[in-house]
Length: 210
Image 1 (cartoon, rainbow, N blue to C red):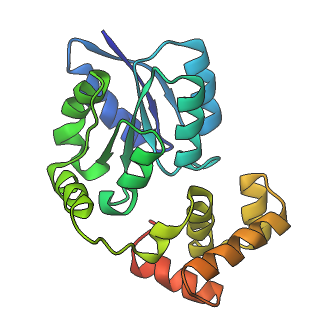
Image 2 (image 1 turned 90 degrees about the horizontal axis):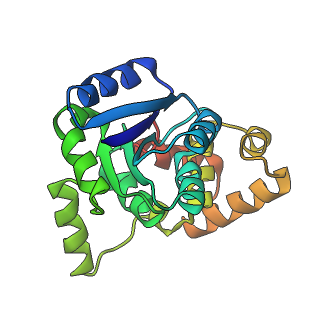
Image 3 (image 1 turned 120 degrees about the horizontal axis):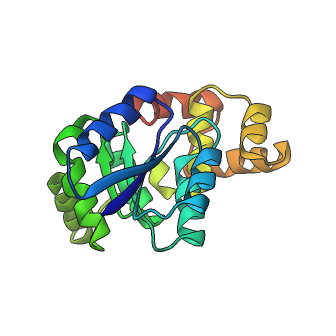
């Protein structure tokens, strides 16, 4: 039996995933969580083979959750399920330790295949993304400005793009205002921009936030 935990803050998404999984005889949903805190509690108490993880949780960034899970439970396969387009986030998630990445719009068609792939030790990405990764490896791929950022810098960029103030970002990430200001300065430098307005415009134009 493949035991699965679902982490998503939308009840309808969880319900839909459960319906798909429960139609398969050798798969079982053993827990569900609406935020990172609940997720950590569940995987402490219950054994699971696959963690289906949303990238955008209310209390913690999905990449942070992914890294934490991989550090304490390296045997769990983490399948990222996100509404963000894979060309924007999948490679970053895979580098952070994800076993696979699937968009919510394709979940109904690909979820079971993705679960079987990651639980067997493989990596799951769409054919389109696999081709893009192969192309980038064999070409002089020019990185987009946000691809030059570290995971934490990228996280701060997204929060700036959502219009959050420095104090809000600091509180959310449990960091000092000074630290967030330092990240902001690095982001501006790496992306060759001068203001938050430019960053916000970039995030919106590149559809990096919902």
